[in-house]
Length: 364
Picture 1 (tube, rainbow, N blue to C red):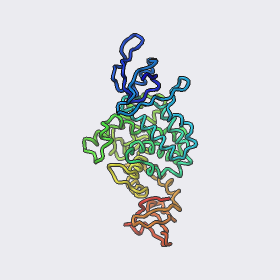
Picture 2: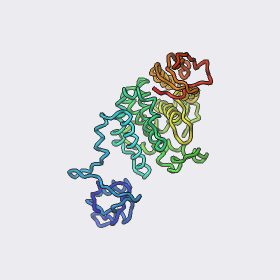
Picture 3: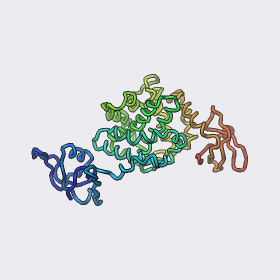
Picture 4: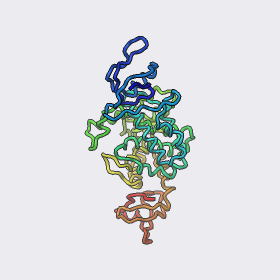
């Protein structure tokens, strides 16, 4: 079938060689088209191309709709409807769009900040709703697409924490963008590493440690983001004691944006279900984060994170590791992960005194 380049999607099979105005070949016959090919054809003002009625994976090709000469992707019709979506549905939509952009980076395309801003900024703007949802983001994550959920969660969590720490709106939005982009360098790794269901080998871990540098290279020449965002992307795995990567920086040499993202990254990884590690409850994660305070993590960031979580926890219903459920009635700010809980039968239980019992899950 003959279609316009704006109707193409990745996976289309080219049935005839495409030539430019000078009659020089541009794309050879039988090419399986990728985003870069489609963009290339558009830039060379190719009017139409002949492609197979089936995609490379055997599925039927359904061309994008054309309205008054403008390509309309059905998904894009919904972009302006995000205000009518629940926060969860809006979040899922942002994850879907991030995945599409990530796949483009895997195919060598540059970061399109206009697209990313269009999809992530409206989500971050819903900061008041995020206050109620932010510590439950791990519940939305799907194991199959954990990596993409993690990146969007990191953007949301980092922006939220930046706001709670008193950054101006323009800054906490930048922190959110940096969080979203921090793992973009994973696109330059062997996809098999990202899909692996078992613990990584030492060689694979060493490859993973290159992703902050790859991410920095993806964004370093992007004029529409600040230097602070670029530095945060590079440094988000650095630790105060110098044990981080890729540069082994210490304390004052680590950008404040990167310190925020570092904590949010650890928290979301610990509380989400994915292939390599068993997930922790938010409160077990807090205990782990507290142990890293003053050594690996910035104490100001840790305290702000815990304070913002604690403030929303009085009255929260929880399930304990002994399978009893109850309601949090008091929190000691020195040990926020071990509050006093009133069980369903009215019994009062202090988790500080019962060290073998911990909060397993927040249920409401």
